[in-house]
Length: 171
Ligand SMILES: [Zn+2]
Ligand SMILES: [Zn+2]
Image (cartoon, rainbow, N blue to C red; front, top):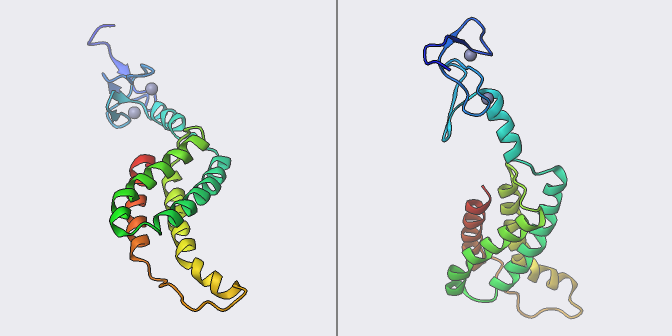
């Protein structure tokens, strides 16, 4: 192929160009070319690349919600017992574990919004742990003498740290 070969954009047959898509080799004009880390690509190749990258199915979102909710609730109950100091250390660990278990459950397929689903699960899990004393108050066989505080700074810190880590892993 000679350098001064005249090419015409496959999307704009009237536009001369010297650019080619680095994947399929089709000529593309500067208006069509999309700059990527591996060179200029035509819009078609960029689209099919994204379709391969984001492969999570609706079922994966369902699985991510159920698995995320179960493990987030367990994590919130455990971290709700250990005190703020350990929460600061273990919060990001818990977020990482939750993210990895969900990724494993959906076989590492990627989705645009999996991070949001998992973050929601972490928040709901913490709410369940925080409101659990209310449930005991309502359904305990005998009246409960002492109601633990419902405002839980430790769980709020846990949510912030765990969501931050899960977002970084799943985004
Ligand atoms: Zn292409
Ligand atoms: Zn073009």
